Image 1: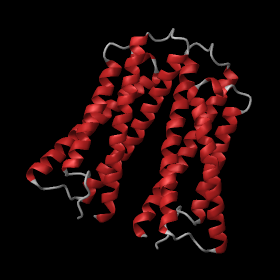
Image 2: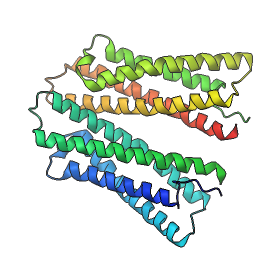
Image 3: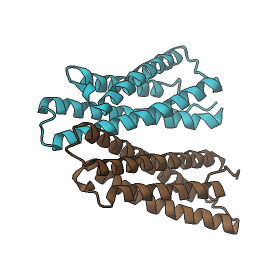
Image 4: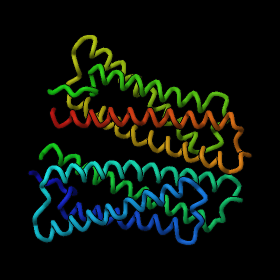
Length: 152
Length: 152
């Protein structure tokens, strides 16, 4: 099996997973700490998706870190297929959540300012930006894992 | 070169392209005919993206139809790479536009009803649904074309 940098069981893959975990946790924290996110559907959706992405990325970061340490990469095609499919699904969901949040924040900012105090809106914006960064890393992981699949 | 059903130059590919053209045109028409879409950023974004997707899908539908008729599929790796990359980029942009529109419509519907008359909002909803259908077909094309690339 050829080793693609950034796929499962490499140090670049470990960095990608770590970045995903950090950015999605930051997005969740910016959205949920002290802000009334539950009054908007897309903010609830973002929180739900981030609650799925964080454990997924964290688990795969642990797997990658373990693989790098013991120098024994995952080679089972079934497991790699599940990881690639999960990456794709989560990447699509993260993009949808990030763009929904960004558009709702934009609408709230330009609708006269009666809906959100400036402090809350900037936190929503940070949250959407973090979700986009998390999506970007997640797409990279998904593409690299998909690239690995035909070589199995 | 193996023939993947649904990729460039097959009759399934032609149907996919035709479906994309129809759904994205429907989304554009529902959004723009008689509705003040330019007052919301995400609606303008949807119109822009649909203006990109329609010519792209229509051109590729013509190419596929011609390939099927003359039984001479496109085989140049460079052209297939460009088509696959364009499909991916447009698929991501369409998903972002569709989810932004859907979330803004949802917010407008639940924010008290002062922003949109019921007739307009149902047209916005139809437009978002058509954009999601167009994204679904576009994702299918992108996946099938990506599947074709390693066999070149």
